[in-house]
Length: 126
Image (cartoon, rainbow, N blue to C red; front, side, top):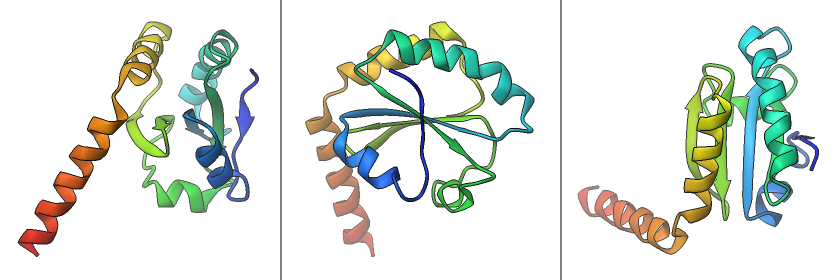
């Protein structure tokens, strides 16, 4: 599958309609972003079960701000509408594959339970 461009108009729909979404936050002036692009494109073609997307932080400043992107490239992964991974810096191909494998194996029922437990603790302390 080809890498798609995310904008404020298609971001929410993309996250909501796909079980696993990898996002590369980047900018055209960013050297490491340009170096990472071929690795990410190759990953996208090898894993058609994943939506691989890019957010141009210069053109989509609202998205970059809402996810507090302070360094690019930043890789973010959504699984079942929950952010399960976010890391600044490009990943080598082997690390991208490892993150993919772990993301696929992640038990989202357990993740949601942990999120609910943390929210309950916050509310109890407030």
